[in-house]
Image (cartoon, rainbow, N blue to C red; front, top):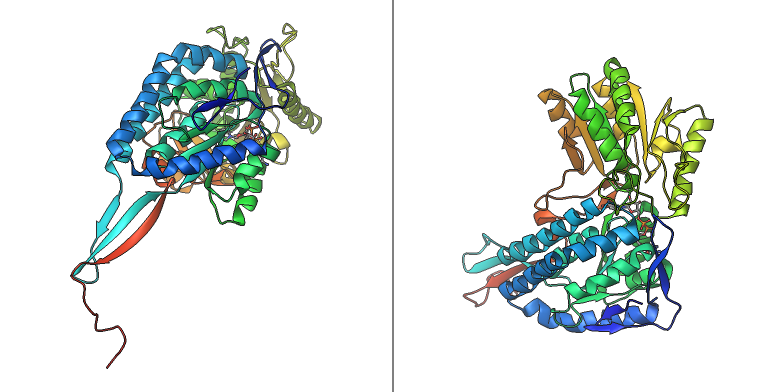
Length: 484
Ligand code: NAD
């Protein structure tokens, strides 16, 4: 059984442990100790105590400790990748890449934070200095979803620590086991700087959100839970950083490279069984090229290899749980009964007797009212709809509560310019969906979130800003009392 990591020690709870399930086989692969609100108290107290030394540590020294986290990630790369595949079901091939990328994120913020402390601005008085000082917030609560347990944790943890904060992490229930295994990456840090606790969102998660000593909640997860966290955080006017759901559109213009657009749509729709926050969940195709595009999409999709993430050849891996698969299937069935055509998939693969697999599914004949075109699906479903042209596609893309990611396939620079400015999404891709860059900001507009991760913006969000007006020469000012 895996323990929590609190104040530099491994801690077991008294409650029944939580089992880790392999989504490809439905077998139990491990157990995590199951925390309670009491563990939130001890973890937050430890993080609060650790904060005073951690914030004062010279930036270069702190950077050295964060580079050491990156080194540990690389040392344990294979073991972590295998465990991520065991508990999330996703491809081992991708998981190896994500461990390396997480290491790069620690290296990046270790250095960035050494160069950033605010700025000096001209003062209204020649005898004064105006200092814009960036300081850490204090204890940060990081709440992470199950789809990328390491990467999405890293995007919070690396900048939060580099900025001088201490952190209490609550991973998602489904991925508690693999997340507790990350404690070995932080054993060299002073006790209390990083704490990993488990427990349910409703109890442990909410206690973390409402704890008066937690100054910021950095959350990635569903829009519904994000909304609840924002409401709960309002009492203390706590900083909230929210990375939420999406319903990402991809537009294919008549001038696009059709073959590339079809391959990219299939990849971005079915990667990690569609359980990526920026999965392509709506494809709008210019009617002039709709038919050849759809043919190509079907051709590629029917050849995809559906199988366990442990096999590097598997292209579409299982979903995380049967409940999640049922939700996806319900959306497909609802669309079908409202007149949509399920051209491929829409079922559990007949040869998969175990595991939470769902066949890669292509749906057409859609209306914007169908849930599959409006609500986040978070599964391997690609709805494809014809449009009269770029303008209609752009308008339909923006007609959504969400605004996380969006992709345009075109060779026309004028369309790109208009798209860059008018698409309502925080992450915009042109001719290459889902590519990420640790040095550039990631995040959503509208109900997809608040704040940005990665890049300089990702560091800024974990810092408080102070403006210091420093009178150096001293003495009485003529505008003070008495006026005579
Ligand atoms: P979720 O919202 O159910 O849970 C996310 C985390 O919040 C988990 O750790 C959970 O235990 C915790 N939680 C649940 N209820 C809580 C509460 N009341 N108070 C505090 N914490 C609570 O999301 P999920 O099912 O784990 O992940 C899938 C969702 O995450 C999808 O909607 C997806 O789009 C979103 N997501 C967004 C991004 C992004 O960067 N925008 C990235 C990945 C996933």
